[in-house]
Length: 178
Image 1 (cartoon, rainbow, N blue to C red):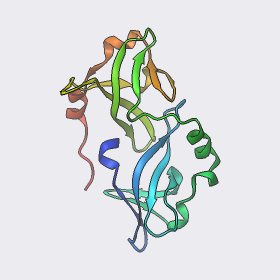
Image 2: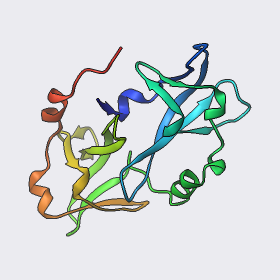
Image 3: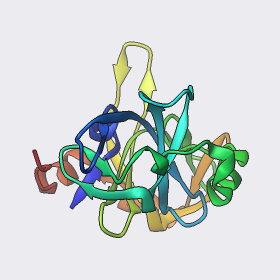
Image 4: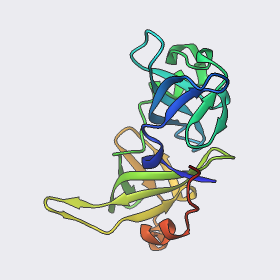
């Protein structure tokens, strides 16, 4: 199933056995080089932590909510080395600018989608924004990304022609489970 970033933010993390609410999803943690979703930034509801991470491996089921075995699946970012390494790079997708290799600005990432089973990004949804005016959303395939930097995402020039209206992709998206 394909999941959109904008639709998973705020999702509850529940205990699989008891059904107790343990946390709320605040963001995704995506490896900038591979596009693999490594985990989730969460706001714990039962632990004395302000923010924590939930590695993808800690999720036992994903329906309307994320289910974990227990609150031990939720940890501080420093406890999971591969996630801590990603976070130290300070590279983000949402809100980051997108430019081609030749420097043409395509806009900013406002949403993305990924395959829930493979946990890899598929598309970045990009939009130019001017005061009081927003352009039509477009999408950029993950394979066209050259580099993800803290201040910009660089995409291939030849793929600029293949950037399409985002509404075409949204129409083909399967409905999320309820």
